Amino acid sequence: MKPYPTLSFFRRPLQAAVLTLAASVVPAVPAANAMQIERVVSPGGIEAWLVREPSVPLVALEFTFRGGAAQDPAERPGVANLVADTIDEGSGDLDSRGFHEELEKRAIELSFQASQDYFRGTLRTLNEQRDKAFDLLRASLNTPRFDTEPVERIRAAVLSNIRRETTVPEEIASRRWWAAAFPGHAYGRHIHGTLESVAQITVDDLRTYARRVFARDHLKVAVVGDIDAASVGIVLDKVFGGLPAKAELAPIATASPQGLGRRIVIPLDVPQAAVTFGGPGIARSDPDFMAAYMVNHILGGGSFSSRLYQEVREKRGLAYGVHDSLLWLKHTSLLLGGTATRSDRTAEALQIIEHEIRRLAETGPTAEELTKAKAYLKGSYVLGLDTSTKIANQLVQIQNDDLGIDYIERRGALIDAVTLDAARRVAKRLLDGGLLVTVVGKPLGLSSTDNGG
Image 1: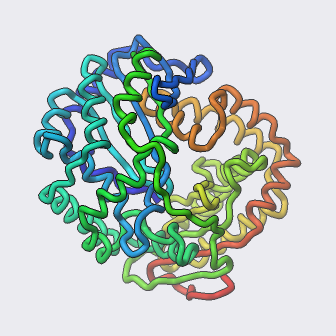
Image 2: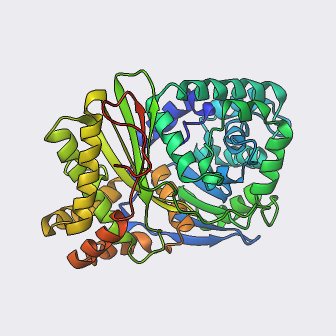
């Protein structure tokens, strides 16, 4: 359940084209196995991880603050998302138009996004424009204007998007799943908020969120490109040094998904039914995580060879696609998946999904499946580090997950160390906890039930 791209993303086709062209005419970023990650600490004590690549005339900077939508007021979900969509709508002496004119004429990409646990920022700039780019980023974080006109314009766009979501079966199923799995918890509230809550968000709410969340104590930063460590130290203090030392975060309780064994059917007059299913996962810090990651890949983690894809799509043609993934948040861990099927085949598709989950829990993967999963997960990871922005994104994620600066080097060995016995043991642990299922549509022969049967 990712938030849609920030509205400012769609306003910058020119700068995106310039940066894409620049990236296409210079050597690629270093391969993962040759990447040198340097820990940089600024004179003011702010830390970042740096991958220096002088041959690429770009600088990518990625950062997160802990907080995210979980810090929204309980009665007004959607605040973090609205902050992300409006914080680049003017700052300091620049109004919205002036701010975006500066970005566009210098081909600077700047965007923000809120997830459940983090508020994330992404900056990409040609090296010759980096001083101005860092100035604009500093201003957006330290002196956002939140002027009435852009806030109301973007609020209207957010409300329009929420209205659209209320007619999309997959969105309805996802929203209902989270609400049922985490009643009364921050994770049960949608990142985008509701029609009622977004309409009630005030500029004071936006300013209060920024003041409470934008702080240095939980800040994680990664920089990739043609810039040295000394310059990065100066940038860190320039951009983030004026922020409060400590965030004012409300405590969030650790939670487990509720309603396991329950099936919720939401009637909607559409030709296909959308299904969301999920249950407990395994924490990223758990020693069994890597084995669980491979078990999930074998079950339905995105590969055409996964069991769910083969049984639901290839053998029976019940759905165009079916997927599941491990989701690890700060306060919970999940196995979460979904599909969409014809209304008259939904019951069969769901029966197959549940059968395959039980079968993998009982017998575990085969030796061949485990070998293929290891090869795929090692190779695909490297392919996901082929641009400066992707590398910066991954380095910030590694910091948030507390995996260590040498994780990319160690990752292959961690995968290879998973034995078949371990994978079979973890398969039972991961998949034997039961599912909460939401179905939206007119599924023939399916109704809501408390026991999933």
